[in-house]
Image (tube, rainbow, N blue to C red; front, side):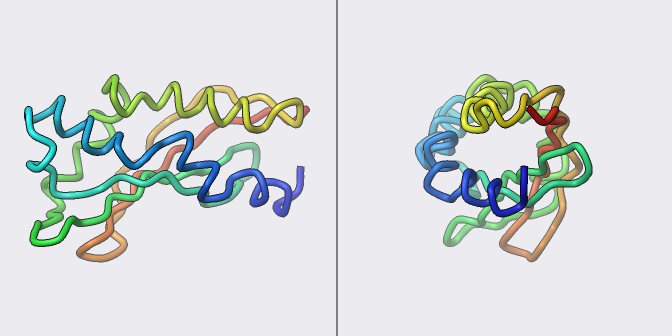
Amino acid sequence: MTTNTLEALFTSGALLKIFPEDRTNDFFEALFGDANEGSYDIELAYRGMDGQNLIFELLLHERPDCCLACNLTQGLPQVFSRHPVINVGSIVKDIDTLIGDRGTCGEWTLGQTEQRSSSLHVIPIRIMIQMG
């Protein structure tokens, strides 16, 4: 599978279907009882391929008039890995479906939170893939 093929599969529109915008509010509603208590919005993005791994990112975009502090996001990989609303396992299954017979997704892991800027933090998703 080529880089161009993967980029054509993992468009922002396709990823928005896998991880819709309203999932952020659902997450904060489950966590705090009020979606307005959240300090960021979550977006799924494709970073690229690293060896036999697909790399996706959960982009945490600071909400207006909120603070996206490191202490809020550093423990999130552990929370996201098991939270039923974020449901990384379901994200991986949907990516596997999108890939179709070109390959099969295997085990996945979440990396540590990366701070790209004061208003953008990123949690990488590494998915092992076996090419079809």
